Length: 391
Length: 87
Image 1 (cartoon, each protein chain N blue to C red):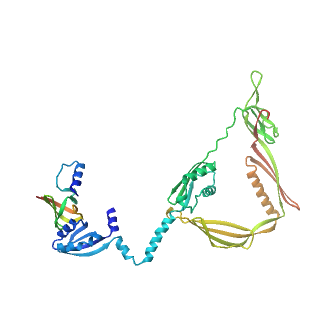
Image 2: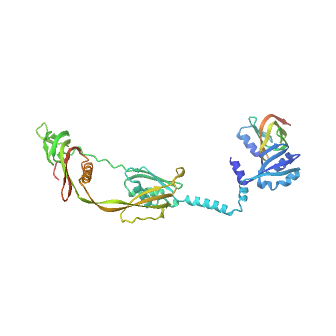
Image 3: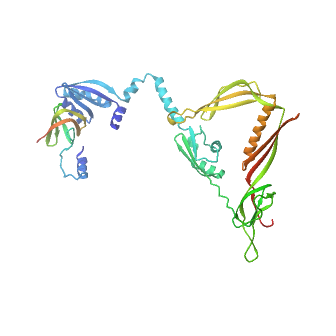
């Protein structure tokens, strides 16, 4: 294989030897340190191959040995170059290709980040960009160890980081710092109090003396499980009271909406903007704008990745939807629908720690607008620990 | 191959010293490498005779060809049926 490649690079000639004693020709050639290969005897003549440079001197040896030589074929790179020597464009094109490949390989084409959990990828890309690692960055200027050290020092959330540069591809491996767990004091004396008014359903006390019974009412700040306990000697001892106090609690809220509201509506006008990203350089291909001031946009990016190799080229397609503010008069049904949506959001976000057991809604319409009064009955843990002592 | 190289190879393979003798290596009856040749005396598809120091090696067979040849060694391929040493 390697020998064939060397022969191809040097160029060789396949020729035919005709005569009475081709063996003599072989011996004379070998005596002059000329290499022959693929020597075959066929139909009274002999064929062989030798390097192109050697073939120039072989005529006199052929005359000496009384054989006649005829070139069958010339092969190899020198022949190829000679064939295309007149086509300067082709040579320049090949040279330009080689130079382009060389220059392109000096820049970063793509960055892959793995190991992110709480830190967002865009945040990490921004940090990398600040430290000189971005698509289109000059590869020899990147200090991979320095970048990882700098980011680890600047952002405490990054516990360990490695920037690996393979050709034009950067892979960033990250291990995020694990936050130290909050250690709960189990010896500090404390009471368990109620953090909200309610009616106690159940008390599961791990430690401490229960001061209220199940079914009784409780107000905010009232001690439910005391950390002060009597001992057998008639004295008192302080303990770290801990309990789960399930209670039925009430929530009341109201949502109001005017009879006329201002909402955004699409006008139907849509424009598209195309932007090419070449090595991080954004080039606008088409420029479009809508007639309204307010615009809703969405953007999609397409990056070619032949054979799983991400190229430093991206095409961003941004759609601009024209929207305008319109005054809309609400009727009872649409107002109800909007107010119930708000009530559902209130449940999801404000009452997330509770189990809602009962809901009462009261819808009223007045000249000012529509109002939805909501009463919720929930079951929740109202226990809160408060240490015994003075500040 | 020079005499020096031949001697080195013999020492490497723990072969007894063979002054000016050719080194012949067979791969079955399909290929033979002869080191220390002094020229080809006869070359046809049925018979190849190679001159070495002190003797002539004659190989007979079918479809014999010289795959590669240099000033001191050669590789013969084909179906070898007979080897003869003419001293």
